[in-house]
Image 1: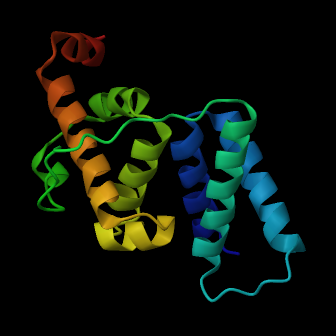
Image 2 (image 1 turned 120 degrees about the vertical axis):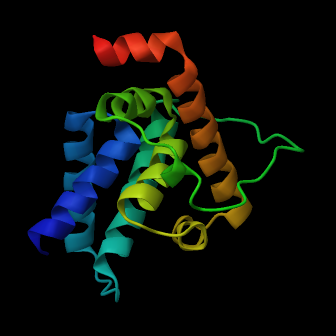
Length: 159
């Protein structure tokens, strides 16, 4: 396993947990599971990400920390995958936005913005409908737009 893959997996863990020590623990346990498994997948990164995600979900269930957001029946779907690219967000605003997102939204944002996956690829990787992924990206876009418009976010950036 190369250093770039390890860093990518750590960033993925951090996006799920939003905590450095929990991300390190999650990565370590996932690598341990991978090393002790007999599977030899074609894409090691995707396989370990799946281990990480399953372990994260198990940990959340064990600690009753699962974020559930009801899907709105008639919520508009994100029509294009480039909507977030149109929003120029400064570094501090991104950090503030990251704090406002739940784990599912952070995961989709990470895979889309950092890893460069399309909504269809994310849907396949997470084994969820593409519409669900597009809905999460749309919610992230709305939260980013609200944060950019809010005085509180501007004060946080200046501070």
